Length: 108
Length: 156
Image 1 (tube, helix red, strand yellow):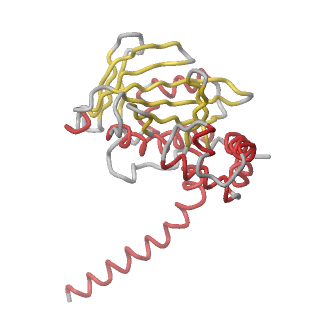
Image 2: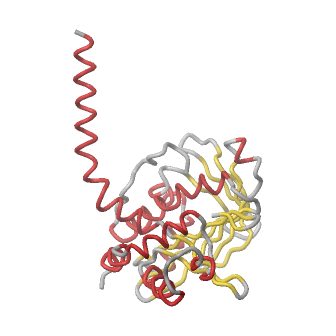
Image 3: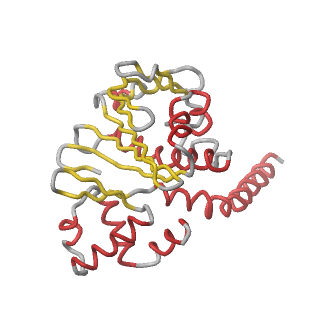
């Protein structure tokens, strides 16, 4: 599976997206902290974290006996650059052209 | 982002290149400028040598010192913003850069932390790092950067 396939597959699950949201709200959590307030078994969370780590969406660091999970936004940036930015451009250009035309009319 | 009295983040990217080429991309001003929105970084790249980041017009944005260096594996930079008073007031942060070969790629890990909660510096640099790393990956893998100007202005 390519890096992009791993990434989109990892994002295609509401539970995994929720884990990313929880790390966004509070980065550097242990498995135990992530399991609190989540309607998922500890084993389920562990499996989701493994998929997210394989897609490089989270980075794991050891501190003493603890494993801390950090949200890694770099692949999301790559999706943005590859899949979103270029589709935004025509719309932004259309807005800019509209603004220019309306302002030019004011000058008349 | 804030764990007890610390602000901290970790960014990871896998780049299809060699540790030697990636190290060069991280330490040569001409190379850095291409993916770091025309910022220049100068240092002697030895332990204890000063480290300085400048805007295109020469103003110093951030300054510090190389605390540890082990080419092409690891370096630790004492990093302090000197341009914005509210960021400068927070004192120095630590940026750790680690390279690890994984198959045909290199895993690049950037850890940036400061010994204070809710750091504005960490928030400021955390907006820049994903763009910089995405650009660096693209430059090394394809020869081109994807984002030429920083969308949020000339912050990092």
